[in-house]
Image 1 (cartoon, helix red, strand yellow):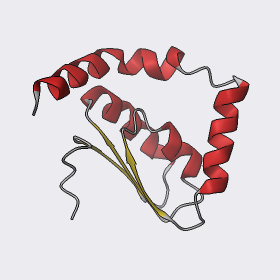
Image 2 (cartoon, helix red, strand yellow; image 1 turned 90 degrees about the vertical axis):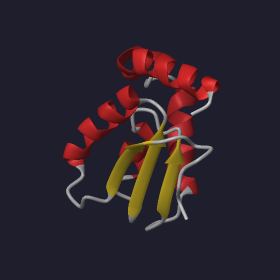
Image 3 (cartoon, one colour; image 1 turned 135 degrees about the vertical axis):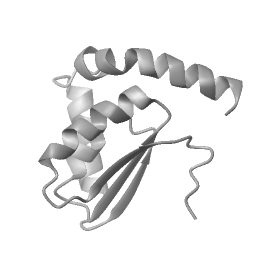
Length: 107
């Protein structure tokens, strides 16, 4: 892992909980608009790979629309919070894993 990636990982590991609770103002018109845009832009039953998924907010939004969702993030803290949301995933179509967006090992 590169030095920049190590720094990013440590930074986001420290910020994960606060990011989920405070950094995103979920009531702001621009935030709501962005989520609505993504709901419309993603086709029904699509397979989604979300690089830099953070705490899985987009996965929550798309869960009922997509056939599968893979969230990848460099931060263990972010992935831990995202996996905590899988409880709502009755179809087990959401997967979260720690990884580097520059080397996803997806073939």
